[in-house]
Image (tube, rainbow, N blue to C red; front, side):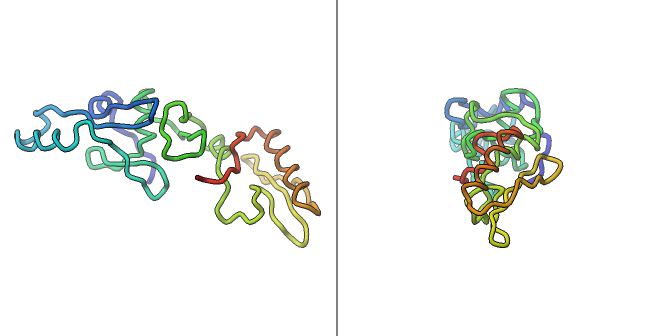
Amino acid sequence: MAKSHLPPADYLRNLLRYDPETGKLLWKARASDRFPNVRRWKRWNTMFANAPALYTLHATGYLSGSIDGRTCYAHRVIWKMVHGVDAETIDHINGDRTDNRLSNLRCVSQRENCRNSSRHNDNISGVTGVSFYRNRWVATIWDGERNIYLGRFKNIEDARSARKVAEITYGFHPNHGRIRT
């Protein structure tokens, strides 16, 4: 789902209530002038007012839902409601894409977000940036512009150590390379 501009923050605040401690969104009751007739207004408020909003698990692992017929990610809506602006990239600090507590969300550049990414599912070494090639463990790191060769090692522990030192040197988040939950 491509990032798109969301409705204005005031509009979102009129539709939704957000609890920053739990990260949950709830629909607010709506005024009758938003509906073609009283029956639909009563039905909507009976079914949805104070009910969870934007809580469907999207294929990407983020919570999402529909606002005015457009699919929106919950964390992007929350950011806009709280801060009043669309964010370039929103990072879930602990890596849990469904944890939308305000303390777990931060606005970062795409480059910075990559420095807090989880380990890829196809990783067989158990360490991001470490692979086995021609009877040696090879350690590399991407600094945002180029792939940096860190060395070839006889054992995985040395390759892992070289990678961890490089992560600190290049300012990677301590959670980088964790297993996705």
